[in-house]
Length: 236
Image (cartoon, rainbow, N blue to C red):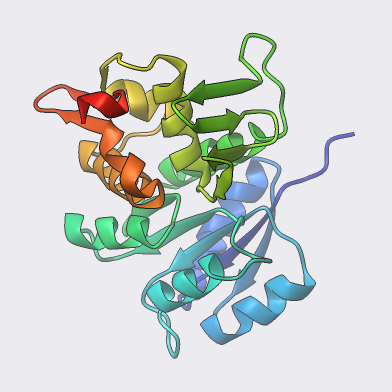
């Protein structure tokens, strides 16, 4: 028996919350609604959800601050977040992704697109616990080790905490070191082929991934006009 995935929608506009609730429930999800950002952390500390859809323009604590707070909490940091906002500029999207959000939906939005993005983010999360018979259990490259089945990454035996999207991007690069992947290939591997995003989304995730890898981050090389590859340290 499949357990219904639970989604928390945080938006102070009741109409938006009800629209998302109706369309997601049609797909078999259980949807919970909150209109106040201050209630989110206490709620999540007591009640488990599989994904949070978070509006940026909340009264009181902002969605950005709330996203930052969730990602800094050892107990809540692994909950996927989709940001929902009327701010559609690329800069706002980049800021949201840099805070650790998994995706960004702008208002007004198509309910069909919102459902597709939810499915894509949840699918990436589920990949952590699903064993792919064709995938390698472990990937290693110059002190960088990835345990795919455990969804863990180690750099010189020190664990590196990555978001689901960062993990998938690094997995793609580790599977073929030296190979140049274009942005669309990385998007398809990390986010799914049914999700439409701008190339800049991958660039932001790459930037965050480089920061987390410290001095090894420079081994993720940008190939101008093409994409990215993972190169050897002696090539840096």
